[in-house]
Length: 513
Image 1 (tube, rainbow, N blue to C red):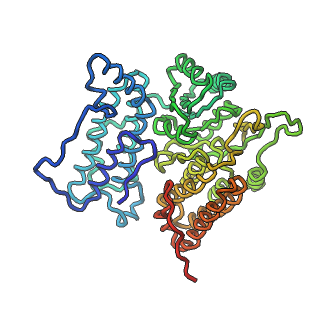
Image 2: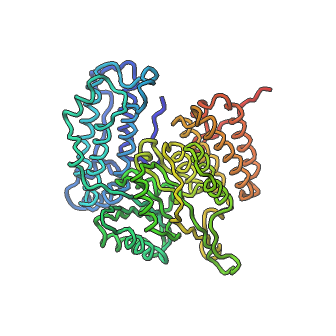
Image 3: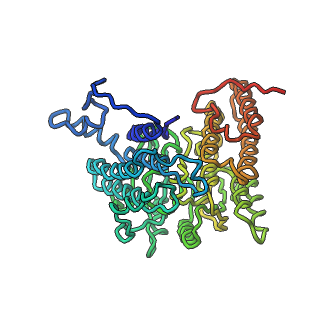
């Protein structure tokens, strides 16, 4: 069995290891002797911070606290405990009961109760946070996780499990904190010229009776005044604004991943700080999604060119996206499968869609860890998991394409970073296969063919942007990737074990005639 977490889960990753290995073991033994000695309270450990009392150690401890027990770090707890829950209590139909081992045969109700007691005991993490905002955020999210597993109706569990669990938890909705409708996540890098006006416009347009929202901004290593502006804004909006800082640039994908586990909104929207937005239209989209119970809504966008070339002004969308939208709008009735196929064919801009947070958590949707192509994984995992998708025909984002002399953008990168295409495709493909998105009629007729087409098109597009000295390596890896497709055309489940992970690269498979 392979147990792993998202990149960046440096804290609480041992929770998943502990639960998933023990519950996968066919036999466990207790050894009644000491085999090792664990050294506690060393700098860099969690316990170090809880045991310092005076002098210089207090200063060092507080620095460590501020660095590692920030909102970004406590967020690592939630994807791990949710992953444990998904493994213990698979959300599947009764028809598939015989295909899964829901819980170990020994004391299944005891395992479920112990898991819930573990969630309750995790309150110590919130109690150790150094600010009220961080404490309250942690406890609200912990409450959401507990209620999620206590209120599930479609989880295959042993007889009598829910009666046992519901006896220890209050699932009355009235006891929950006020529901948040929308969570906004925005990474920033050197946007001091735009950021205050963007936030001011956001708050002015989203504040309306009966509509609740929260905002996460993650500064990803800015060297201008961006971080200072954000700190000042955070001081004035402590009720719903969360500011994080990575200290150095790790890429927009990783920055967004820090905030995803902390969202409380029923929907999440990802904002790029150098674009323009109609936030009133966004609020209306959220209301529409809530009223019609959509789990993902795709929205059109416009493009504005920023630079000295007066011939470039503003246009509706990139031509390939515009063709897809026109085709959808021309049809009187469009099925869910047709909408999903169309949505998968769109460019993987994260701000083109509004996504249900339940979908995000249930399908374990995150961005990829690479600086370039990190939104590929989000695009495919979220749309692939959608069960009630909708094309919502109102523009929210105006995407700004800057002249390279004014502001650099990742779409224009032409260096070795383009080689990160391969781990990006590999991680996304494994995740899609693992989630079963290539299975069944929808997987066979829609998702897999669209994924193969996307991969071919992206390989062609990216090759023009690869440095000459890397083109040989690029061609070899491209050939290998396409051979993997050919080998697994009739056995797509094998793609979940495809050895394309991170920087590792397996030799090309042997293809027999």
